[in-house]
Length: 107
Image (cartoon, rainbow, N blue to C red):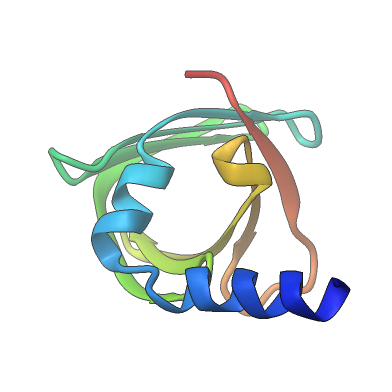
């Protein structure tokens, strides 16, 4: 039974598109560590990231998608975001960094 579940999950994630990622990421997210907040307006291509009290607002673009993960460009920096728990949380990290943060959907 477990193998069937894994195969079905893999089949569902194989069709994950840029549009799916935009829909899943659109909204407001907050994390407990460092205090982190992320607001994405995918339709306008804008995002605001607040990390340890420092706010960055700029263009937002999805560079690539793979399964339920996306590499995105926020302003001039790349981030890797894994969509988890059916879009209720994200695993968020700057590209090339070993540490990541869990962000939970606020809206």
